[in-house]
Image: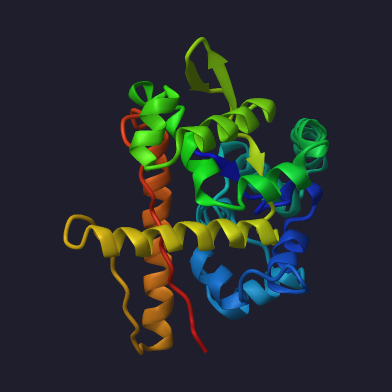
Length: 275
């Protein structure tokens, strides 16, 4: 079950796909190198450079492969592919037909984005700052999705927390609309906590659960999995391993999203170039 979403892609703000790709490799929001995007699409770096410069075009299969690695959902994938089809088209009626579909998808997506922003605008800064200030609030939030863990005393016992703290925290989650009270049970209500990838509250969330992981490793050595390593490796192997991790995370999210709510787990993963 997903508890928050990153605004990783602003694809719907673009009507020219090369401009979108350019935004990923330049400026303050730079996320990838041209070489990385070229590898995602299955083309050579010089070819993608020509695409960004408007001298060449991706085909729809290359666009699909690129969208997969960028984490597009089905709608974003369709939108991105339509942008490519529009740029490649030479028949004016087909271009006009494609543009109509592009504008329709764009309108729906931007209206939804504005709706989501309105829903969280009143509480986003205060609520998210408090929600991510410690591991306990997100843990209690997720516990409310597990039928056998929806009573305060069960939550307190499972997390080794004082019942008074659990009750106060549940009141906050109810006030935020994330949990609903049903007699003596506290049940999952919503998981729509939208956090930009650049938000400082997100780094707090990473830190809190990594500290919890260290505590678990100390208290239960051998019972759970904790792995830390430092290697030196080639540039090419680094990129291969990074892409393999991204593919694994995609599979993990699909599996976790459809999994029955029975256990509260923490999955932390770090892989980065230290230098």
